[in-house]
Length: 154
Image (cartoon, rainbow, N blue to C red; front, side, top):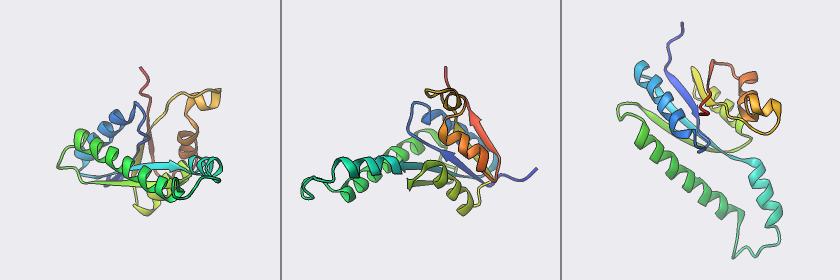
């Protein structure tokens, strides 16, 4: 079996984020591995804001300001999760990206030479999404390394 040196954890700040972070941190601690926590600002959200706010006064609202504020907010939340749920001896690397979530997570897997991905599967509205969720399902199909999916629904 391959040694686990780098673990990518997909964090979406849902109600499951704490438990995903704890689980990934536990694996990292037992394997003396680096924990790479990834969150993605969805491109669809950016595109929606572009459409809704296209006629706004740039002095009142700008897409750049929104992206900067959202990145700062998510960075703060990620730092809080890491500080609260990851042992200090575990090396961590938080990453906030913008794009299509599954594509960005897979890019991090490649760029960081990850050995495993830890994500949650949570129910959605239709049957296919109910089983894995859109992002999780695509990560399963395309990920070049093992994927550990945690079903954390009560």
